[in-house]
Image 1: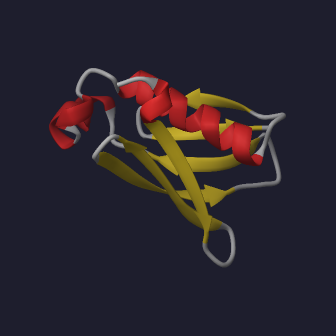
Image 2: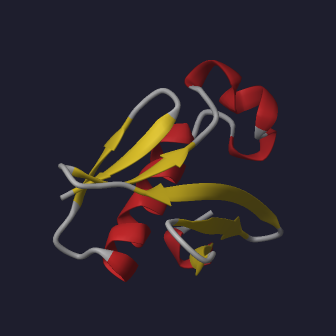
Length: 96
């Protein structure tokens, strides 16, 4: 798949949370996010761990880093252009 076929949609619930939907062709993933603060962390996005990624998301096996980096970059582009991100084992951190 190319990045042209990848999409990220962000929806806000009332309050400090919402959902992120990543789609690639016929496949999709949904993650929750929570806004943080005060401090350096703008938002956290829980994601499957490295050890469980391939079994939970076989259509994106061995592409965890590239998929999560794309999601984080799109969240920043759409919602927080001056931010950066950090990928962890169980979270994406969007940083101020």
